[in-house]
Amino acid sequence: MTQPELPVVSPLDRGQGRSALSPKRPSEDTAGLADVFPYYAGFGYDWARALLKSLDVADTAVVLDPWNGSGTTTLAAQHEGFRAVGIDRNPVANIVARLRADAYLTDQKMTVPSAVQVGDSEFLDDPLCAWFTPGSTKRIREWADHLSSLPTGESGLPYVALFRSIRALTSTFEGSNPTWVKRAKSNEDLVTVSAADFDSMLMEQQEFIASRAIPSSDTPTPPVNIATALSDALPVANDCVDVVLTSPPYLTRIDYAVAYTRELAVLGYDISKDRTLRSALMGTTLIRKNTDPNLLIGETARSLIEDVTSHSSKASSGYYRKQVVQYLSDLSAGLDEVTRVTKDGASLHLVVQDSYYKDIPVKLADICVEECAMRGWDLESLDPYVVKRTLTSVNRAARKYKKADVSETVITLRKA
Ligand SMILES: C[S@@+](CC[C@H](N)C(=O)[O-])C[C@H]1O[C@@H](n2cnc3c(N)ncnc32)[C@H](O)[C@@H]1O
Image 1: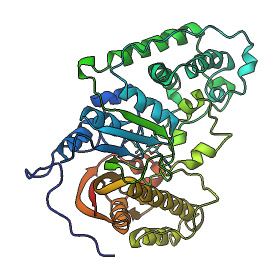
Image 2: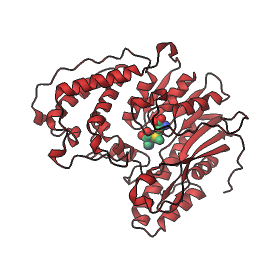
Image 3: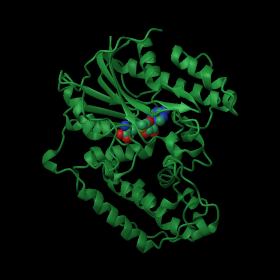
Image 4: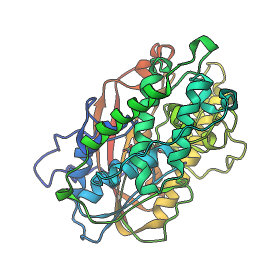
């Protein structure tokens, strides 16, 4: 397939040369409440807002992010006055996205739950016992059970305060790869925290989040819809979306369920016992049994599968081939859905990162452009930004294969 010709002007430019704003989030980002919870976001809030502002669309436009994560797109769309729909399969991400969308509601107050009168051993089976002693787990679970009984509009702030507290207490379980969280190997590694200390930590975290709330004079009015669903089965009607702004998971072996395993444990998920959620996420390192063998993909994706399959390193033709096929299958199913729900003339803005499999370049931007072209999307612009620190560079084993800097690319397409 021939590569579509690249236009010179990007949609951010409005004829004034290329945008100086990189989509990459700064490491100390506070814009758009990005600091309330550390989420692996593909782009920053300021960039997303500038992009939406530059678009020539009606005030009634609907903006969709089918891989919405912590809700940068939905928040930016809301603040630019557009209706927004954010879909993500990770319930942790949706709690954060919902809180960011509701952040002007500073009256989200926490009430302290009463202690449950049962013995500590009742908590031995709790997924939080991967990091906490049963006695400490008991108080955390009391809080989590209490929050699960609150209406969604009231539970966001305390849930995120709970997530922040758990993270702070278990930071020693984070490795050099920020998306791979370890579990305690023995009872000595388990964290102990008294109920009183935990309660006051939670209150502090709550105050921090409340202090970051957006002043109510800036209260955005358009509705934001955030739903827990899969990108290959979007709960969205046909032909109703005007703008899609998104960053799908990359082919870099980030396992979102493992990255948020502690927060999922707060919500009652034990991903070490039930693999349903983890294996449903795009980019997962688990292999499903049901990937469609008749995958409809373009030349670039197909040649990546061939290159990985014929690589001399261990498991390339087995496990790694399957993982790449599974990823491409999820990506193409997601793009099918994006095509179904968008209006003719809609714009699609994708932020993706290239990477390497061993020494094989994974040209994700080229793959996306080609997959979109096969689905009737015309390329309007392709803006690459060099990424210095990637998961390839933090992974020691992968370093020997790293050949060049990888780029993150903003792809702009229009539905013909
Ligand atoms: C790069 S992140 C998006 C980050 C987002 N831009 C933000 O502001 O946080 C990709 C997201 O895709 C989600 N995801 C992975 N597989 C999915 C699937 N099959 N359906 C829906 N969401 C999925 C992950 O949970 C993750 O939140």
